[in-house]
Amino acid sequence: MIAIITPIFALLLSVSLLLMGNGLQNTLLPVRASIESFSALDIGIMGSAYFLGFAVGCVYGPYIVRRVGHIRTFTAMATIASCAVLVHAFVLNPVIWWVLRVATGICFAVLYMVIESWLNEKASNENRGTIFSIYTIINLTVVTIGQMMLTLDEPSDFLLFSFASILVSLAAVPVALSKSEEPAPIQSVKINFRLLFQTSPVGVAGCLTVGLANGAFWALAPVFASGDSTEVSRVAIFMSVAVIAGAIGQWPFGRMSDRMDRRRVILLVCVGSLLSGIFLALLQPPMESMLLPAAFAYGLSAFPLYSLCVAHTNDFAEESRYVEVACGLLLVYALGAVIGPIVASIFMRLIGAGGLFAFTALVHLLMIGFVIYRLSRRDVRPVEEHISFADAMRVGMTVSGVDSMTHEETHQQTQENDNDPNA
Image (cartoon, rainbow, N blue to C red; front, side):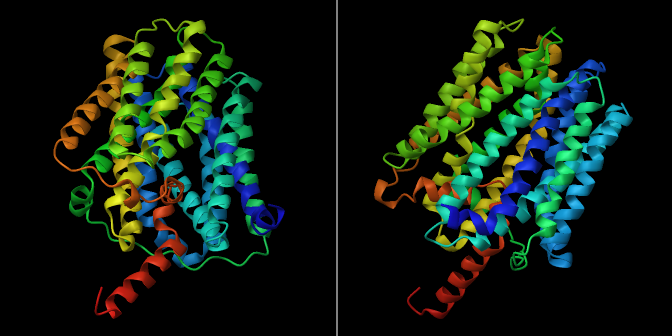
């Protein structure tokens, strides 16, 4: 294990600091916005703005990296993201916050791109699964720690904003001082969305569902959890429980999907998300004794859906299209995450805080109907033709669809097929 971690230790340290800072600010900003009497719609647009920036960063990030390299790109994006956190505390204006969240989304999409392409470069076929498992564990752990840091001070004060800024700034140091060789330049990928939908309607619809529901969750759940209380610990614990549950749910549902039609597992987690969403929607005002079990149930079922949809789509995609599929599904997710927080905020304005989960329940209900329809239209995929869910987890990382190694492998595979008269 030590031999595997040593070459990427500096990068993993940067990841830890970066995501801890991001976890803190993602929970802090909706709470502070609520304190400043921003409307639910203002907060919803703020969440949408982040994912709009994230989508832009996914599309244009490779051009930045090709122009100045991974290290300079990482340092520049971390610096801009760090400054953006502080400006939130200086200028308490919804429109300015929207612009800042777009900028932050762009920065973090590019930062994820650099991190994951670098991890792929350092990984071999023998240890790739281990490396990305470590990355996933660190990701979920430090985000949870970042959310719990909300309890260190009052959200109305400057201190928490400075903590988030310091963590994001420090993330650039290990990468900047690393002696590791930079990965090969990132390549851009052309996406055919029509072909993507033809490959797997359920996969595309599922990623859109995740974007709509989970995008709304990340943007507005802190507002829901706080209720009429000023006790920020309830918000931090609520968000952390949901994240931990999502981590727990990945592998049992993933392993289950390796042994049966993945659409049935997708149907199962959507039913779980629907029921837990309805339950949460009825908790008005949130009741402490029932809030955390409901949050756990929601995270357990809703968060694994993205990886399941990626795996299902890749079951039907040619190996040479894995990069295109990963990019396409990520952008579909981002599109949903742009729309979801705005629509959910309208639900909250009309029916109260529980409107957030009324919206997520409706989204999952529509997905259930679509999956049932598709089960009647396409035959079951033989289990022996499934790709491993563990491989799908790597393909479905945040922006791994545009990483250099995966693209390079795909390009080589395409060339081999072009040169093979029997392909």
